Image 1 (spheres, one colour):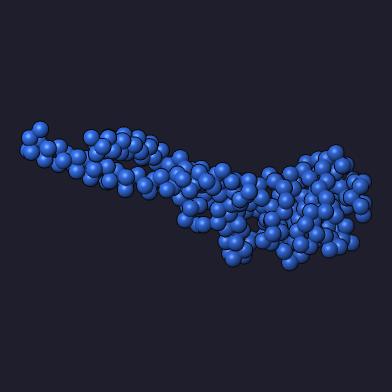
Image 2 (tube, rainbow, N blue to C red; image 1 turned 30 degrees about the horizontal axis):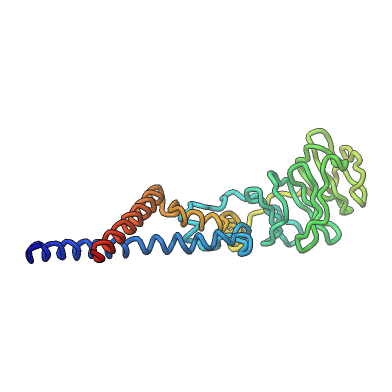
Length: 253
């Protein structure tokens, strides 16, 4: 083999080695993301990634997650009972459960009585749920309003009649048409600070951390082209393995 031919082969090998190095650098960032997210996903239960939620505003904005603008709120005593989406709040504290409608809330003997989704909720002053009374528990169906009379007794209005429970909420009797002194719960506007706090809390309960890590692992986090870019990175790794093997064989020869 002539000296010129050997020099030409060395030049080709050196050029191929440069391209191999550039491809390795380009693929390294993607492989780092895939490796780290893969390790995290293998320990989802231990890290509680499926029960923890993203609080970062820019990530929530990236996913287009917004809190509902419409909030139905009632003032009971000095606290607001608010329904946002299917989440119910006593001031800033979320009440356990999902709800579709809020018809009103009143304060009675250090206990909040809330009419919501054809149910009656009994809450402590801290927002802990004491009981949830359903139609099967004897409450009247189709509650439209809730209020208190002059003696502080609970009164509800349905599409058919008015009813009043006993002290233990076990039996409901028709009130009749005597509604003198009944004060009905009416919607109340929220303080801007409370509204902002509830919206922030709502957004922080929507997106699980596991979902973000899965999207990073697959490339979907970066939009419609993300999976294609990660596919290209995978193809680049295949080229790296082939080119590395070729370089090794060439050097041995």
